[in-house]
Image (cartoon, rainbow, N blue to C red):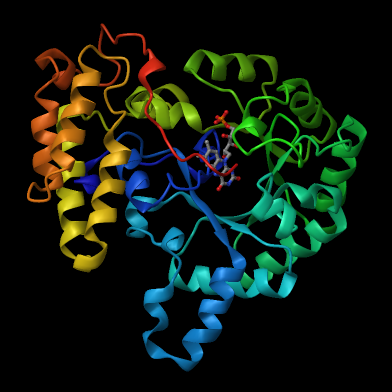
Length: 387
Ligand SMILES: Cc1cc2nc3c(=O)[nH]c(=O)nc-3n(C[C@H](O)[C@H](O)[C@H](O)COP(=O)(O)O)c2cc1C
């Protein structure tokens, strides 16, 4: 099905719009769903802990069955579906990151590798001493990026905040970027435009409470004309994206996270609006059918002991497909009711729940007249622990 869809943008454009890495969400199934809506957006994996990969690999040397221990967050679809896809790694040991990058790129030809320097969670930035904690150590970040590039043989980028705790001046951010760019030849930075506060705030609060300061990103773009910057944080609409490109025409791209989870179908015009290409053009009925068939196939090749949790995950990704449309709540209630019954396939659940929607909503194609303004007040997203 995907093979018949619109062509992809040239590599130079691939960063114009990207879907943020989001733990517990941007797995291979969510990425498959997103590919039904856009061929050109760059998709990120969830953060994969380098340690998890590294120790799997060492174990695998001694145990041929250890393949099954590949972290769930590393699982991918075929390259023709995923690409362009960026693997995000988290870690703070150059040897471990080099080996994890090598192993990951053997497993799948990711377009790029990205180092997480923005996650504020206690497990990552506290005990783990990586994620946002790395913003205090630009020289180490440079070492880590070099190791990742050597190990994985892929371009390596950094996703960071504009600062961490009291290290939040523009000058410190500038020093961080300059050090990493000069020492490791990293040329692309993705900036979540708020600082991280490492004690006292949960990851979720850390995505809301520290104020967004887009001005820092604009100033980086102006101050480092040889580097590329992607702006992230608080982008909700195409109009927001236009505003950033108008204010800062040489900005490389914009990355969107929660607004994609909250209303995925809204972003089915990314290819035409941001890449000047045809949209895949599927209506919601076709998206439900294609995603449903994919889910059934995934269920079939999964061990029965893991099918229940997989089914829940697959359905979670499709819950917000009708966000903002009349009857969307009914759709979600129907999915929920059918989910309780173990004997109904995912495709049947989605198809039956979809019938709660008006015909016009199911049939409406991206970009056609009458798109109802989204109202995400009934978002049911749960479990947003990272970031
Ligand atoms: C549920 C959830 C999980 C996240 N997991 C990650 C992650 O694994 N790696 C990362 O760099 N950022 C993670 N983030 C942060 C997002 O990538 C993004 O930087 C943040 O949500 C701000 O963008 P937004 O305002 O468009 O959502 C996560 C965010 C959410 C909501």
